[in-house]
Image 1 (cartoon, rainbow, N blue to C red):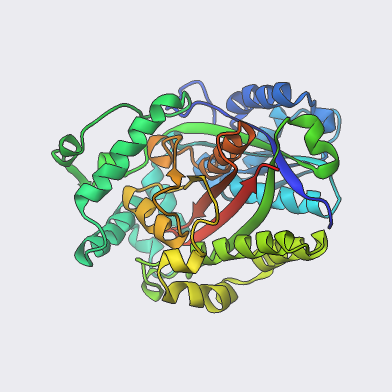
Image 2: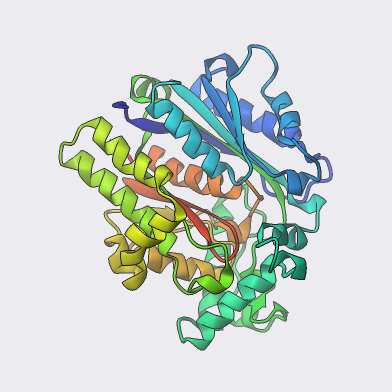
Length: 401
């Protein structure tokens, strides 16, 4: 476990409500595979490990990811895996495969046809199956409860939330994959009706279909595939309680703890630690720690302090792509991750301008990596979330070297 790993390629499909796409996602995946292969000069035969992220619940059938493998092709045979969640977690598994030397090049991809289902009801299935799910509280209503808590506590105003949406839409004008974009005044947004008070339509990510793919490579291959690879210096995942009443919905200790794991890994490398110990700092602590230890060990110290001090400031991060499906959640994540005013947050428009389920988190990491690979950022942070009210959080920090 001594070889650094870098992102060398990224592609995503436009996020739209698409009638020409099935829940298998093949129609969206084939073009972006071709795009990312063309950019890197790779072929399917060069990929040592594939890992996908999707959801059987969203597709409406068991083992739905198997049909997506048609986009890979049956020949040559491929080593393949799958996670039943956002493909950012598929990238995590692929990263471990490359770190351990089981593959030199890996590809993670995710896809979702959100328009094929009643998304708000589908996401209720991720709740506690005994106490919450039978009540069918939908995802937007739960987010509205979180937003109301923040308003009543004086953490933000509806104007602050609208400002996040307006800035995101303006930024998305330069992102051809965005579903929503354009200039709009905050005052105009505040005149629009609620969809679930205090949330208005612009406070919620739109429903759309899309896919994304990221290629990572070992040190031995990365520089041959990309002029400026985005080297992964930290990768962390933490989990808060799934019981909404068992945690403070205005704190995101799992995000702060995941960020701390990334910071510790980067510090170990900078201090001259061996690649093995650095991989252990980011890999073992992030993947091996249970949700209990995350909330107790790293999470406890993070939860008690403000987000900024817990995450140890921005640590030189220039660009951050945050997976915040609701406007107030960007405010929470900025605090938890310690992102100051000098950090360019969601220059792509973020999830508020395009949120393809099970690909949006991977796209955030891909967009952050693209900022490094293009030279626009020296260090970038990609973030993904899963579960109700920011329950699970994954952080990936990358830099150019």
